[in-house]
Image (cartoon, rainbow over all chains, first blue to last red; front, side):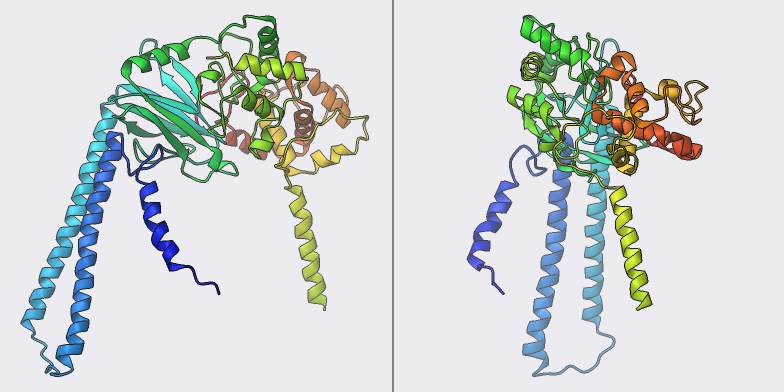
Amino acid sequence: MVRPDPMKWRVLLPAFAVTSCSGAQTPLDPVGDQASQLFSLLTLMLWVCGIAYALVLAFLGWTLWRARHVLERDPPEVAPEDRRLNHGLRIWAGLVAVGLIILAGGSYVVDWALSRAEREAALEVRVTGHQWWWRIEYRDPATHQWIETANELHLPQGRTALVLLGSADVIHSFWVPNVAGKMDMVPGRINQVALTPRRLGWFRGQCAEFCGSQHAHMAFDVYVDSPAQFAAWLTAQRQPATAATDPVLARGAQVVTQGPCAACHRLRGTPATGRAGPDITHLASRHALAAGTLPLTRGAIQGWIAQPKALKPGTMMPAIPLSAADADAVSRYLVTLK
Amino acid sequence: MRGGRAASLVLLLLLAACSKEKRVLDADQPVTDPVGAQDPRTRQFQDNAYQVAQGGRYFAWYGCSNCHGNGAQEPLDLGDGRWRHGSTPDRVYAAIAGHGALGARILPEQRWQLAAYVEQLPTLDTAYRRRQDTDQVGEAQAGNWSGPIR
């Protein structure tokens, strides 16, 4: 048997602790009201349980010391009516009750704050889990129509968005650790979660319930924008797809909107009306391809279309056989879809 | 000794059952149209539950059930075992590909899977088919997506 080097662990353990305390996907660096509330509950729980744990260990140490140093020399007579012991036990039971009441009270207060935020939401977003991508729809504040996008969530800073969570196939779970707690997406039910981000920036969301072979490649980007930036982004998303401006792009547009892509993908304002796959009207406005699998570049798009299952085994996206010239035109066209 | 023989028989049966669910998750291989009614690839699609189920998924995704769904009337009913364009696999494949612009968008492998799904419909219990439809209620039907499963 190989014994692990104890020194190695002494170096690694603090490293683990430090890496998980900051970053774009951690509940320990909260940037949203909901994540902050849950983080304070975690802190409270650590204090209450830590104190209880320290007390138990202290009493255990004391009994060991007492057994060795006092009882051996001077064995006690059996005294069923030990008043000091009974008194101590009562105080201990009282402490346990106080600890539990603090935990239950803290949990109640946080729960209440979370549900109050849901009632005050100013923006409605619908997120549906598919194997293995996210359909994201914004309720247009002006027309109340749904504006569809996929795999990238934009949130206005300092405002509360109510996210309605559903599933099209199996159970998924919606989790943006820096902004809020996780919530399951259960077929046959609409769950909801409120998100109130306070810090601008990029964060990462991830499916948190095993949903099939590509569960790990079911991520999404979360951008917290200023309210003005967010309004501009939503206005851009509302627009139909950009028209092709030169012959190569026009050929790409023809293949995409009339070829096999159009059977499953929608480009608003074109003959491509499929809904089974993600809406790609503004594909190039996003930062990742295939639910966080690849960066959104022209090369990644072309590779993804040519052989998606080599990049994400099991994905529902089929390989599309295209001539070299068409594959080039298609990827050139798709990166213009800002 | 008899017990051992019976056990190995059961094991063999189990192994045979495994191949029915076999699916390949690796890179897609090019698939071509069927060559005549006796194309040996037919059985690979028809005898594999995964391939048939994929056919059922595309049946919903491409909106086939809008016209050929459960309870469709003759001549659109695909469950009555009568094939207007011929009953051999290559004829069914050709009939799927012949659906105008939609048929042209469907890739060869998906046509194989759709043909395998459609060909087993006459032997499929109506209740089982209804159950399949219920399972896919959250998926899109061509240009329509009616929201997540409620």
